[in-house]
Length: 208
Length: 208
Image (cartoon, rainbow over all chains, first blue to last red; front, side, top):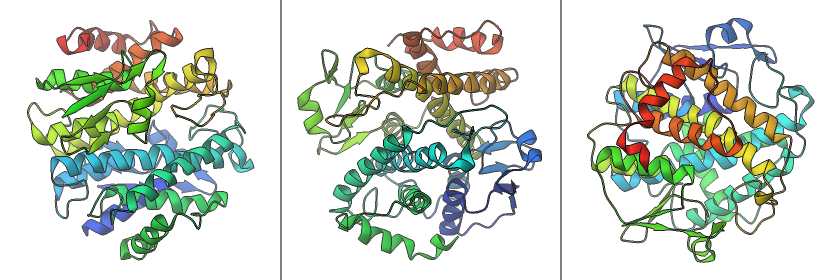
């Protein structure tokens, strides 16, 4: 079994933090080759993204949360996807929001404005996907919407999905830390988000 | 407990098919008011999207897969998120791909080209999010990428995530059926996808 990652990219980081929280160690291989993933990696994996977990029989499990689900099933404790039905629903809801609004928002700004991503407006290999500069505004809108929702949620909850740390905290942390690449910071008036960020960023798992 | 839905919108349909497959019945309320969701609904739910499950204590669980996770925990059989660790990982992977590539792709085309969605380039309430016509191309690229991956997968698998029907089939079906609104059909050369579609579309659950 081997986990394919790439430098400090946010999606592999979601899995690395998850594994650190679970106390799971496994071999990792960096799929990068300078500014992009390596040609060998692209050839070996049709989805062409990281992270990807390669099982011993060759099965490829991509998408950060899919890899985490695999390990949650293998080692259920500590539960990072919730324990009760309500917790499980709320963790999934907040994790999806963190991904769709915050992480997607940052990626939308970065990939459509940074010259390094010319013709790679989506994370693809081979095809040309032109940048759409208007998406910078839309990406910022997504991030702002997430921060509004999250600040309200954290006014009465210690963690993103309630009173327990979960994958919703992991994706939120990775997304908001990733926002540094587009020079976005958590605004001063989002006091609950700032308090939460200080707490989750200080956990040993966050240092990966 | 009550499920908020809206006409034949694809995200509520994901949950309705799931519930039909599980044999779960519950009260549903249509949040629509003509061409948009109702003002009352917008006021009552900050995320402003459907579906949303309202529990008896007022807890709101939004996002289609979060609602399904809630019910999967309440009634585990038949398992629609996989049973083994590997199945669970692969179901999550394919469900995410179906959502990020196919469902998002169709929505991207529709919302950024159809005059009915002027200033609503994202599903939001209140804010103006201008349409970005260039996203029509990008949305079509996403759909094509998904069809390529899926046709290859279905060459050796009966269902999207393997040999069992799962939520990955549900999201894929809803996304590809939704593509009718942008006049996209499954291409003739995607023979495995066509075979699969005929099979899953004929299940009683698909008639919702």
